[in-house]
Image 1 (tube, rainbow, N blue to C red):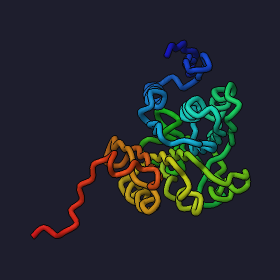
Image 2 (image 1 turned 90 degrees about the horizontal axis):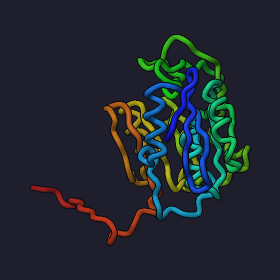
Image 3 (image 1 turned 180 degrees about the vertical axis):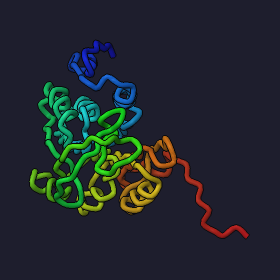
Amino acid sequence: METLSHDEIVEATLEHLGGKVGFRLFKNEVCFQIAEGIFAGRTYPLVPFVGDVQTIVDVGANVGAASVFFAMSYPGARVYALEPASLPLSILKQNVEPFANVRVFPCGLFSSDKTLPLYLGRNDSVESSVFPTSRTGGDCETIQLLAAREFLSQQGIARVDILKIDTEGCEVPILRSLGSYLPAVKLLYVEYHSDRDRRLIDGIVAETHALWRGRAELVHRGELCYLRRDLVPAESETHTAEILLPLQ
C-alpha cells in the first residue's frame, strides 16, 4: 500500500481484481494499523465456504475500510455503510465512491431513535463514542442514531448475510434491537468494549451462532467473529472433546 500524505489525511492506493483504487484515511498510527488489519483480512476474516452473500451491513463504518474490504470481497452484494460522525463520514463517502454496490447513511444505530453527543476520540475517530471514556476528549458533536430493527425494515432489507458492528460501546443495544434479523445472519463481526459486553454479546447470539474466530486485545477490548450454527463444518472436519460426565 503506497501512501502520500497531505495535511492530516493520507492517500493510499489499494490493488484488487478490478484494478487500483484510492483510499483516504487519517494520518495517525491508530488509523494506519486499523486499515492494515482490515485489508490484510485479519480483523474481519473471510470464511470461504459462506456463500450467497447478498446483503452486508457495516455499522460504525468510520472512514470505510471495512465497507471497501467487503465490497471488494463480495462484489455481488449490497453494502450498507452507516457512520454518524461528520469528518469520517466525509472521507467514507469519497472512499466508497468507486463502488456502486455501497450505500452510505449519515447515522448510527441503537435500540431506539436518539440524538446524542458523540465524544471525539483522542487519537483517531475510531475511538469516538457516545460514552465518555479514557480514549475520548472534551470535544463532541451531535449525532443521529436510529432504531436498528426499524432502520433495516425501512430500507426493505429482509435478511442480513454479514453484519459488522463496531460502535464503541453500543453493540449490545444494537444486537438486542435487531431481534428476528439475527438468526439469519451468516457472519457476525462485532467488537466489544468491556468484559461485561463480551459476555452479554455471547449470550445474545449463543443459540443461533458459534464463535468462529476471536481476538482479545485487552481484558475489555477485542474482536469476535460468529458463524451461524448450521454453517459450522460437520464433526468430521473439526475436533470436539466434551466432558459430559462428572469427574469424580
